[in-house]
Image (cartoon, rainbow over all chains, first blue to last red):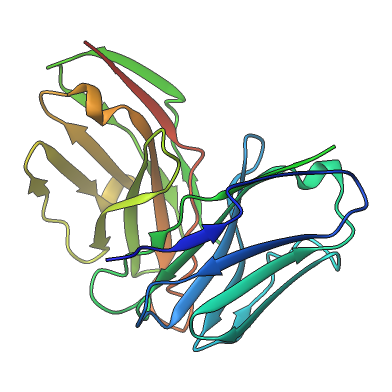
Length: 116
Length: 117
């Protein structure tokens, strides 16, 4: 079975450029999460979607960040304009309703972003 | 708000040794969940366990065991007879129970476990 699929796996860009990260969740999962991982701050939840609707975006750092989920099988995280401090690994994760079963999140392999 | 402390930044052991990873959490919730995730060198996080705060029974799954002590707010993870494949970063994460917030895991900084042959 396919897991959570993220693209690109690696992205190197220059400051000021637009970056779009993509995620395909596991089929049948109705919850989707974007996390950011840095050495300094660890793993941070950026945004949580349930049934394609953004439920909690309180972790989105600032207006330069935006996320969409136009349908149940696709989500994007966009940074415009990008800055060097956005350099991090961005993870997408999906799950059935978090309170159900084990509440397990299934993570993608991450997109490593470097902003020069 | 919840907080978690994984005081051990790095641990190095020799294969077949037992190793315990510590997790201490803070929460104002009376009921909550506790999770452990593993992040191997490949990068993706892998779910290991979820416990409910009202269930203090220790859990064993193969070489893995978890000791939950609500009185000391600890949820420690022990690997018995460690193997090189256990080398990874391990994260402890509490989350609220219900109220629409049970998705909100607070990850610790993680413990890097290196198992040497």
